[in-house]
Length: 206
Image 1 (cartoon, rainbow, N blue to C red):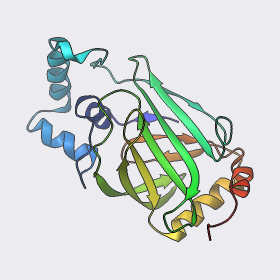
Image 2: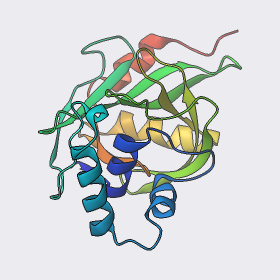
Image 3: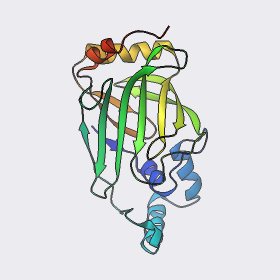
Image 4: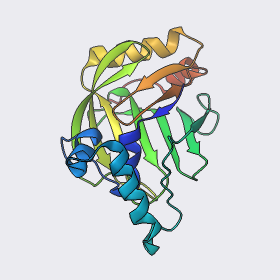
């Protein structure tokens, strides 16, 4: 299952940021004014056709069809799993689930969302809170824009230990892909190999 929300996709391609404490849909609604979504898409399409700076970015009137490649834990790098998202317009994103230590030294799980094209998906200093779904369970998360190479990315952190514990156990007890839904995208993350990687990572830092 994969769905890049229409208004979010437009936002990523055109302005590359989510303003602080403002969702992508709120940003686009503000830019649209009194226009309908179809009128907005038509205007942007025409502007990009006449703009030499558009380069390889292409906006189509029809809904973009995104496909995904779901990689298991540890298949590329230790302690992580990635899902790559791409469409026929040449747009690429990936979502990364990663085991790491918090600043306090606690063993944790992070979800990172990257957008391959320029401009970057967010501006440093952008932060907000969101309700994210793992399968059918709503989880509170804190989102922060972090410096990446080559582009900045969003890091999703669990707001509560209860939320973290629930998702870790979800990854451990299933061998199926886990449905992930945020305000940016809907896709799947692999659970295969998670328990091995979680155990290999070790314990909290002293």
